[in-house]
Every structure is written in C-alpha cells, then in structure tokens.
Image 1: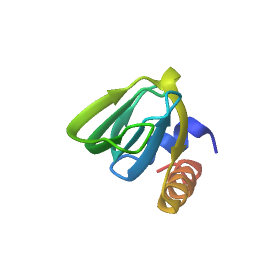
Image 2: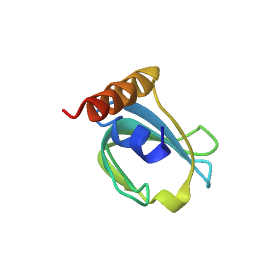
Image 3: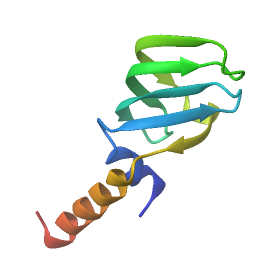
Image 4: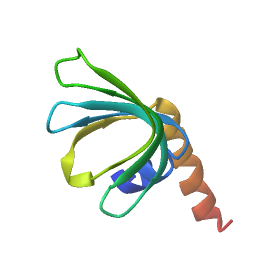
Length: 90
C-alpha cells in the first residue's frame, strides 16, 4: 500500500492535517494530487497554540508544508477493497 493510494482512497473521509508551522486543519478530503497537495472542505483550523480557531468552507494545503496526516481506520479498509478490485480486473 502506497501512501498516495491511501490518501486518494480517503476522499470524503474526515482527516487531521498538522503543518510544519504547528497549525492543524480538521476537515474532509475533497482531492489530492501527486505532490500530496490537499483540498479540504468543512474545515476547522486551529492555531499552533490552540487558542484561536477558524471555520473555513474549503482550503488548499500545499503538500510540502504537511508534517503529518491522521486518517480514520476506514481509509485502510477502502485501500484494501480498491486493491482487491484491481487484482480481479474490475
């Protein structure tokens, strides 16, 4: 399982993204590209200190600024299903 295939199968799932700056973004993945740039919707942004919050309808996060991603376990199940479909030729 490649990280990019895991990320692509997580479309519409909630995720947490922490940036190198310390800010965090909680939202649902709309899309991603080969550079792991992310488009999120229904986003809550939290400052690095945790004292400021912003609600955003959508946002774009550059992949090179991402420190880590937290995905639900359902994302792993989705990847396994998609890989199984590919092996079966569907």
